Amino acid sequence: MTICVIGGGAAGLMAAGTAAENGAKVLLFEKNEKVGRKIFITGKGRCNVCNDCDTQTVLQNVPVNPRFLYSALGCFSPQEVKDFFESRGVPLKTERGNRVFPVSDKSSDIIDALFTWVKHVGVKIVQETVTDIRTQEGQASAVCAGGREYGCDRVIVATGGASYAATGSTGDGYRFAKALGHTIIPPNPSLVPLVAAGDTCSELMGLSLRNVRVTVFENDKKLYSDLGEMLFTHFGVSGPLILSASAHMRHFGSKAYRIEIDLKPGLDEKTLDKRLLTDFEKYKNSDFINALGELLPRKLIPVAIACAKIDPRQKVHSVTKEQRLGLVQLLKAFPLVITGARPLNEAIITTGGVSVKDVNPKTMESKKVQGLYFAGEVLDVDAYTGGFNLQIAWSTGRLAGLSAAQE
Ligand SMILES: Cc1cc2nc3c(=O)[nH]c(=O)nc-3n(C[C@H](O)[C@H](O)[C@H](O)COP(=O)(O)OP(=O)(O)OC[C@H]3O[C@@H](n4cnc5c(N)ncnc54)[C@H](O)[C@@H]3O)c2cc1C
View 1 (cartoon, helix red, strand yellow):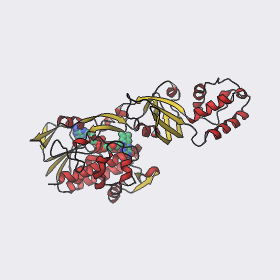
View 2: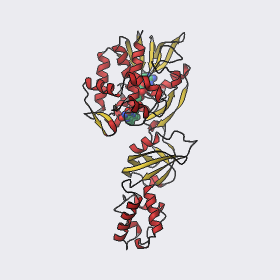
View 3: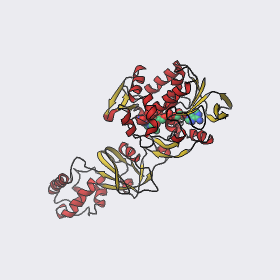
């Protein structure tokens, strides 16, 4: 049994090692000089390997096609992922939100463990870009790379999505799959910075806010709300909280999106109003612009005052109750109209990809071409942040490798 695996990322390495461990002769094609380039940049270089939770919780964090992953997660659960790395010399730790990282905080430890393992079980790494997959009588029969044809019995496509193209994920798998009759759900960015209307964000560019609450509205319906960190940029908003929020905005073009930022989530409106009254008393003879320094970051003050439509030179003692309550509302629900997402290349993950209707969820084998398998982000499944996207890659890679190695 000879298996060609295309792509030496998380899914491809897992698939290749698993297939080799199960007796197959495996060639792993990777276009980059080194395998695992995307793994290297995950979790800001620390690699959030998986989430320490049960499979049901993983499925709850997969907004599209979660049921497709049932067997893959049954085959390789978060606990099994943890055991896999720990038994290969990478001690892990669990942080906030059950996010699992190497104790060393080094993503390179994850890559090294995978690389050592695949070499140990006999995977041959071929540093070439695969340009085509050949079939014979509806059966995968070879891959073309570097002007050569590599004959094989099975092919596993683990080419990733189309985001952060510099890591090698340039969407080649979509092209291969389409040419062989599979439906491709249009690739789109997710876990991505957001573009906002107006000048507010560019005026606040560089300002990062910790411990704020962001609430997402789709056509005025509340979709999502969470606490965390965010950042204003020249185009809109970014930062961990925004990336997570973006995964819920899936219909730009057909639906209207806005976010509200609660700048003081620890204070309810009444308490915040009391706090403002205290500050106003202290600064009663100052200009209004000089009264908010204890409550808000400096950069935010002129913008907040302008949004609240209060004259910055108005004396604090003359601010009316109505103006003050308007300010309270603004600070509890600072509004931004979101007009779209930044391009795919800036997205942490790609939504869309090979339609799961064309793939057998029990084996990851194509329903269109025998002996052809898919694993990882190339498939039309994606998840929220928290280690769930790598979990998808590990689980589908494991299942594809196991199934493909079977006679
Ligand atoms: C900045 C960033 C941070 C992230 N952090 C996390 C995190 O902490 N936790 C988490 O769960 N997820 C994270 N993700 C998402 C996660 O990295 C991906 O979902 C996951 O790596 C997908 O694995 P994959 O193997 O399917 O694809 P990839 O990792 O993209 O691997 C595909 C591989 O295929 C190779 N390839 C492509 N085409 C060809 C070809 N024609 N011939 C040969 N080789 C080819 C590529 O060079 C690449 O090495 C992050 C993503 C980014 C961009």
